[in-house]
Image (cartoon, rainbow, N blue to C red):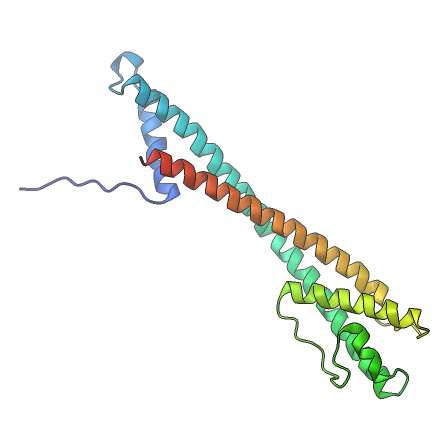
Length: 192
């Protein structure tokens, strides 16, 4: 004897497909022949509309986040390169005797360490950008000659751009998570 088994859809897309097919079937039958109770029919219409909207919102948020990621990554990479070059230039000036090595502390660098700091995360790059801009401002205010190639002003410009792109990326991430949560909340209610 064979049995018929039915597995409930689990993914958002399989649930959407099941709801969409059910709605199409309901809408293709004359109202007098509809076997669904009115409450079930109304729920199907409501869930169809809500789920469609939430899926669309999630897709838009994901697309925005995905599109901004290379822009953010490029801004961080460029800023990181300029910071690295600036610190190398600072260390070269110290090695030539033009700047005292004690000035490294103005940039939150170890006075006795000529290494470029590790910047593995975007926030590390932003923090070191802030350190360089503030440190150079303090050193110049104390009478030191401004370093060029790159200058702290160039780094400040790149830093502002990177911070802006990180804020946008964070906004898109939050929007995607919110859309995902709203979708999961609806699916949990529908599954009851």
